[in-house]
Image (tube, rainbow, N blue to C red; front, side, top):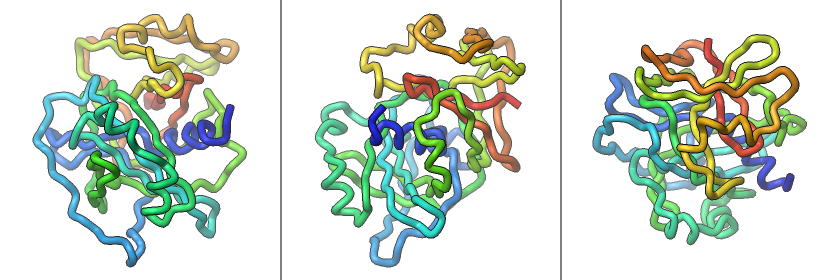
Length: 252
């Protein structure tokens, strides 16, 4: 696995987990530890989009700006949801080296396209600002401190994410879960076309046939008979990814 993909795996574990669903009673996006933008950067107010009925199946992408910090590496994360669906032609026009130079970052990573599987995300309010990359408008939702480089690129290994948010999967929908050998269950929160550009949502039901799961693990598809609520605003989450970069959160 290349360094770029390995870094994306780690960083997306930390932050590629939430969007802004303005149907919530509070503003909605998964957040990690937020910090202020350096004084040299111009800051625009965050865009307030029109409400959406559900996030499920909505396409998004992210730009991750990486730089050194006293504790290791800082990744500042910008997400396109819900301002737009990250059109493929606009996404392909983005150049990571150009973005890094323009933004004063050591490295820029392009994370996407990805698709949500929850219906709603709620979170506490945070310092959110707007930026445009090429023709794609994004909001800055988080800054993550990467302190353990040895965990970069490890699949099926959970990471602690200080996002203080709640995911809501509504009754009547299928959810796709991993059952570990010690009885923990993780639910897929977003799926990716980064490794397999042809992966579709319809294929997720039988995804277990494509995954190389750890010994004793099971992939299970469950149809919800009641709403599933994952996470909390007062505690960190546990998140992992499979080899296709699909992301899962631990069900409390």
